[in-house]
Length: 118
Length: 115
Image (tube, rainbow over all chains, first blue to last red; front, top):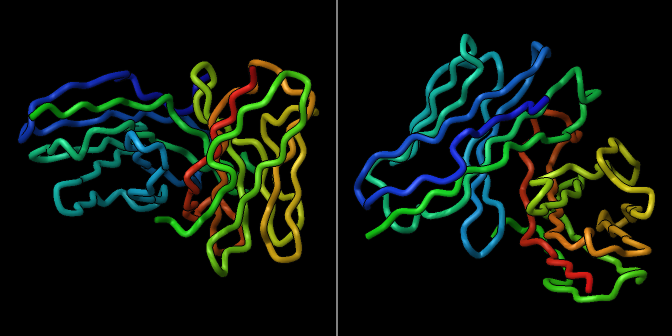
């Protein structure tokens, strides 16, 4: 069973639109961490945010914001006033404490390709 | 720039061959991770090392092996290569014990093409 699901394969928006990327995860662990990474066309993976399972506070960083809801097992990512430079593949990832044997194994979703048109 | 370096950037080889991918972690990081990104499998965890010792194993084929050296750089060895091994191979590193809460910083990747 897929542990991290990013149901949106591709999203296309026009610059300055707001866009939300969905991430739904599945775990039986009580301690876990969620991450978002960005993969621009150049190919590298860039870390965006880490959230632990005990902290449901939403986070905002500039135009980026994240909404973590344990009740729905979701960790969604919103870009406000999107820009062409936001065009990339975005990955949500899960790291489980107990199931992984307390290792750093990351379980990635399939990724969402975001295209921001000028 | 994450501070993680990977060489080579591109590698083209033939089926049946063996290659070695190299990774240098960020200064001070003790944990190294290897991931494979392919079109059909997505991003898959292969293996993790912490301070020279294997810490966790994922979906790594028996034809693949890795090690972390005393200077903390790591190598991923891929042998008896098949067409399906063509992928982007990422190395990542993290500072602390390599636990689930550690943030992993990724290198630029090595793109392997098996012809």
